[in-house]
Length: 279
Image (cartoon, rainbow, N blue to C red; front, side):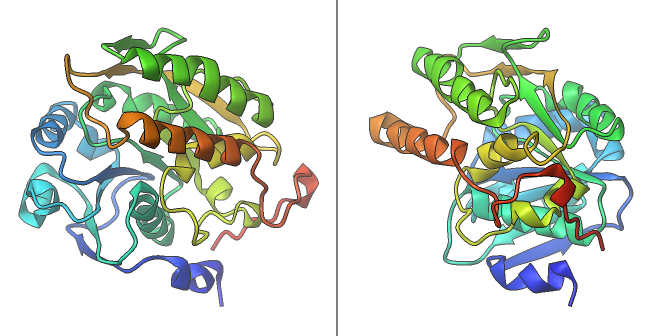
């Protein structure tokens, strides 16, 4: 039994539509749920930016009631696949787990993930992620705060939380300096995803674990990390986010703290103990 067969039972049930054969070395996962016009706007920009020809795009839908889960719509834009969560588990982590599983099963060299709410300039910056993965980096993190990146209309509370709490904490425990850890625009190499010690597809990864857990352990396990500049724009007088209110933000901060001090499974952090399950 190979690794993917072994962990199949850990993947929540989903349905999928594949529209063409694998064309590129890298996959782009876009988790969405009822993003509406923001999602359509992002897809239009991606098509204009020729993104669908340089990366195989998978839409990971959490059960949307809008056009996000329309297979004809996805096929017309040039997506390779539409993955729809049909399990009773909910959360961005569930959708991404399903997408990562499909991408690794189909043999991609790396996987990039980005939100589907039209805040990121994916139509311009995706080539930077592919370039860094090609150079041998295992984690590529977007940053709007350094290296020439830009941000607009960022809510003050979110700015403070990212710059002065979350990023310093993850940087401290990971031994690598990050400026924008809450930015969900990230890329990962195949070998890092398949490292036994990461246990990437564990059952309790259901929310925002893929935003933080891989960042914490990349250097400890002997892999390479880098940041690339991106532009992240919030619309004026609106926060297109599933994280709203004091309780949601407090819960997220608690999750970030726990992930900052998380352990690999098993807890072996010496680079010479790396075990890759390439298949």
